[in-house]
Structures are given as structure tokens and as C-alpha cells.
Picture 1: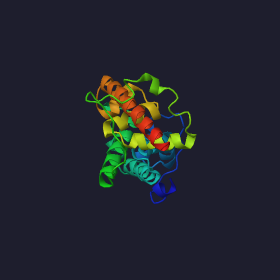
Picture 2 (picture 1 turned 90 degrees about the vertical axis):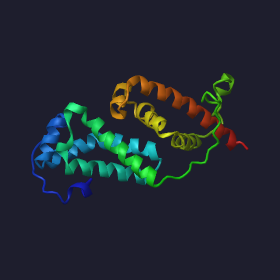
Picture 3 (picture 1 turned 90 degrees about the horizontal axis):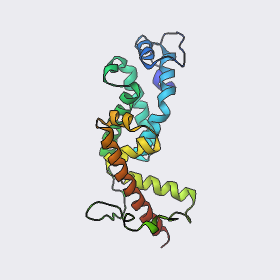
Length: 209
């Protein structure tokens, strides 16, 4: 964070960790470094994890997180509380930046797609196959396969998995960020989970060959 703040003319003033986002932004606009530190500590972790879930790349996640806070420093008054929460605003910036970076650095994710005409995963018609399909995989393999499977999802499904399953965001909060209804979030998440099960099974089967 030091690189974000060292060149700016901050003013000294006391803040409290319980201060509202709105009050902290007012203080940031007046040059209060402690207020910025409080906001940074409040949102840096979730923003970094979201960017990482979307890219599976630590360098990209770090770049996105730093850029989000640079934009906040440069324009704290760009946030409009009437349009939503500060968290939603910052996640929205991270979402747009990640999309831009991923589009610029787009690479194909090698994976065998196996879906029927209705788009359901290959596990849908064979419940028995869902049991213990990862029993012989190590924790490290599971994490690797999950990252690959999430990264191979279409963007709209990768977003809801990252927000709702990995960041434990509510459907309502995710809908605010994604600018859709909570019902749409729930539908996308249901579909994404089915796709992930299928992708994870194919990956685990491939590891045994």
C-alpha cells in the first residue's frame, strides 16, 4: 500500500475503524491518509480474492487491486452512495478492470467440454458418479482442478461463483454488483455449479489415465 500513498499530500487526522464508508470517503477527499488506510484494510482482501478467482493469476490480481485503489484515491467523489454501496462500487471497478485485462491477455484454457443439448453437465443423468469422484485426489490437486475449472467457465458464470461461492456474497449484493436480479444470480449459480461438477470430474478422470 505504501506505493499508493507515498507521493500524495496526505493530512494527519484521526479515524475510527467503525467509521462509515461515506465518512471515510469524505475524509479521503480532504487528504486523510488514515481514512484511506481504513478503507484499504476493509476491502483489499475481498477485492484481491475476487480478481484472483476471475483470473487465477496472482500478478493480475495484485495489479487489479492496486488500480482499484489508485482510482479511488484520484476520484473519491466519483462514488455515488445513492447508486449502491462502496463495496459494490469497488467490486464493479475490479470487475471491469479484470475483464479488460483478461480480454487483453486472453489465452485458451485446455479443457474437454462435455454437455448435452440442454446444457446440463454429464453428472446430471448419473447421480452415482457424483459420489466420491474426488476421493483419491490430493488437496493440492483439488485446488488446481478447481482453479482450472473456474477459469474455463464463461465469464457470467465465473463471476457468480467467485462472488457467491468463493466470497460468500449474498444473491442480493451480487445482483447489485452484476446489475441483474437476485433470481438471475441464483439461476447462473445453479448452472455454474453443474458445469463445475462436470469439469472437475473430467479433470479427475484424466488424472488417472
